[in-house]
Length: 513
Image (cartoon, rainbow, N blue to C red; front, side):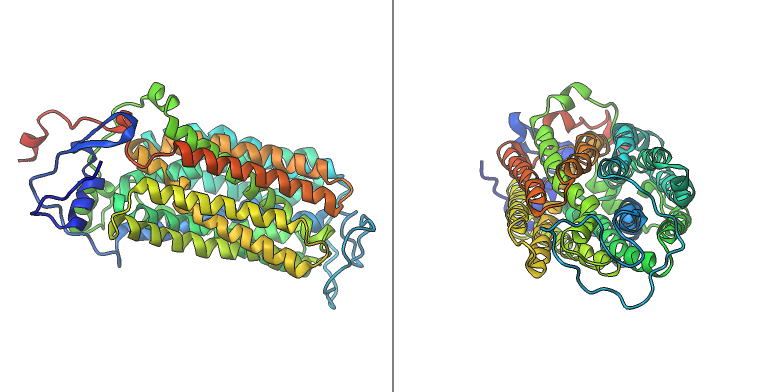
């Protein structure tokens, strides 16, 4: 159905009303807008971004997710240096078979050999790398609920503080045995499990609808930067200081973030003591709905939500497989030293960070200025961000020992994946902004399963570390990626669902006068 702006409105203003006055909309079956009741008053002018409280939240939450992912990936590189059978002090690789590529760029300085090393087989490695996600899944839905009822600021802040504190204990616990390290990583996962649901609950109070893609991609760019910075830095730290310092440094970064977060961030514009009156009015007039109850039955039966679940699960299978195992692949297949390993493992996530930010800007421009429907741009971003990575991931398995092509294809694959950040990844805020934290907890619960089983399955399939075995791992990830993109394209929606539109409170008009 074509919607034409009344003559007294400009198209951009009409689109702004279309997306922001959710409580004045009548939403038909299947989530399509049937009629639109506009405010008689002109909406407030857009508050400037420079120096604003909402952009302060965006950048500090980005730092927070930098810490979240630094704590998550630090073990991936450190694991290479923690294993006695994989990386000896003379930089020989005792577990290489004839099909594994020759070594590259051996370092000329002496490797730090004071830290402990462990005799963990491939299966034990898989369980250690996947242990984080066994705890992570438990606090997804509860994290969204707690953030919505007790304030997202402290739920997120204390979650990252707890994970940072546990990270500092990693070297001591690793000496106690693999079982103790697995338990520690589970607890870290429990602490971090609240991070995504909490930030979605936070942005449901802070993000004007036409700025959602911009603000959330700034937040989530921190996750990419945490990976980009932590992977190469971990390699250098392992080489010069020893692997325990990887955990000490990343843990301290989390403690510093918590101090800034506690002092500068507030759960809503209404509780922020330093926000300008213009910005508070702009945000509050853009977000009219108030959560009075959680319609669990409608949520569970929502087809658009399950479309996000499938897409999120599929994307994370590839993402987590590479996140946890790429340093191992670089080491045991392509033959890179610990110094080069982290740098090359980080290249794919540099590209992903760039495309995540650019795609958010482009998507919001297409919605706001070009009047494209939200569902169209979300599906296009999802398709490009999932099919492209699948193609280049499969291609990586056929590069053999051509390490330049292998690194290039892996980089292109993960770079294209960043586009999906402006697709299904923030679609929760499109279909149910008032319940975004709860929905994120639901989808991220299912999307955590790949992190739990992916590394275990991958290491089980690559016990001999041959190129053929790793090719199978890439095929599985690519097939799952394609499935997720197709499901979201068919069933995804871009409008607020009927069960997520709440009636305005009684006597609202009279109360506001």
